[in-house]
Length: 453
Length: 103
Image 1 (cartoon, rainbow over the protein chains, first blue to last red):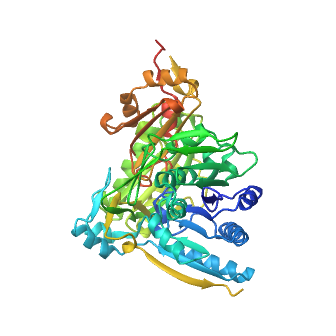
Image 2: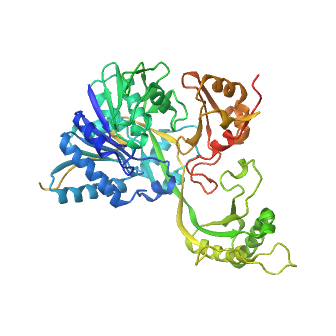
Image 3: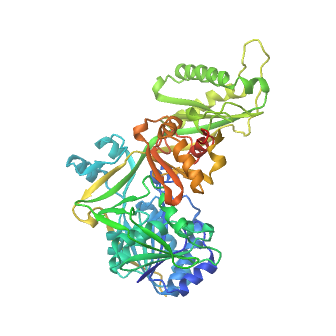
């Protein structure tokens, strides 16, 4: 039996301390927590930064390091610092060092680095070792070189290699959500279908149970299946809550692709073990012929400024589409003349909040409220140009009349200066896998001693 | 007639990675499940998402009283054209879908 304690769905989401204590009393073999995903968008990968505050991260990570010391088992984090680049691995390593210094702990820390050298990927592309997933954007050597960061998603094998160093703490860059949980049970001979399935169920902590905010979950793995036990008193798992978690953020609720194969849960059986835990059997692991890892890449997509204005005049609210279209046309022309730009060099979008700002062309309800917000979004190839264009747009959003005959109107600007700098923007540009000859081929493992006890 | 959202427990939409959107309709009981399965066609979802029907994957899961749809995101997550970073708002379109009268 291998017990994996999952403190919460991600470092930065907090966990119930009492439930964590209860988890420690159950003698886990490892503590595993996720540190990120692509869900917050391309900027984090593009810039190589965490979405959570350093101070919060430090407090929560310190709590887990103390839990680890108490349990005397390894602590592993995957996708450190939201995006799992080398920069964010280093960021969490520096936090770990600080904590060790401050608490007088002496620790062996293994780092798994997952950032990819674009030139090596260009070679791989040339050799046909980068394969598209569905839907895959077009890629080329230039696009690979344009990426500010590319990571490969490590699987169980790379986490096992890190655990094999005997490290107290493993700080991994980008991994699949499941790999950090599946690694040790697989190493200990658990049923491989159960290891991956239990890892998928446990990846968001207690999200697969009632009172998901409590966070803490224990997953017990053995030769024939796995058992899910939420650690908070108030949290229960049922066959329904557990099996429903396969739906979560998963395009196919029965199949999950991982490095080295895929999980098939079509035949899985979910049974209540008691009134709070669930036993699952019948999950299947299907190994693949080639070992592939998924790639994620983000590249720069221009520089952006946002300028909001608020419209409360009923006639303008009623004619908001005409007003916005008129401004966009006039402002575009003025920008091309005064800044000597071509049409494709920049974009000006006026997004109407209160009409269709959320769903755009998919919106099918037409009514508008008493007021609308107009969010001017300007994108250009440099920060300076984007700023200049936004300042050209400014007087239109403040004063543009619906007709030439009327007195000049003034609308509500919430801020001064009116515009907000978004800076450098990024976009995801890879949905591909990389074929490897052996699992560690694209990853780097390093062991460091921190603190001085 | 009745809005889908008024007869089911919950409609949830989320990213499944940056390139896919997935929608889970938790019907809550077998009666609602049957009404959704018979009243909501894959073509209806394709039309709401403005995507070709063949791109829409459908999963009818009676054990959970869940109907699930997945399709490529109308805009890749976080591109300048994308308006909803986490893909959560699409659920409202389905919740407001008028189901035909139960037969």
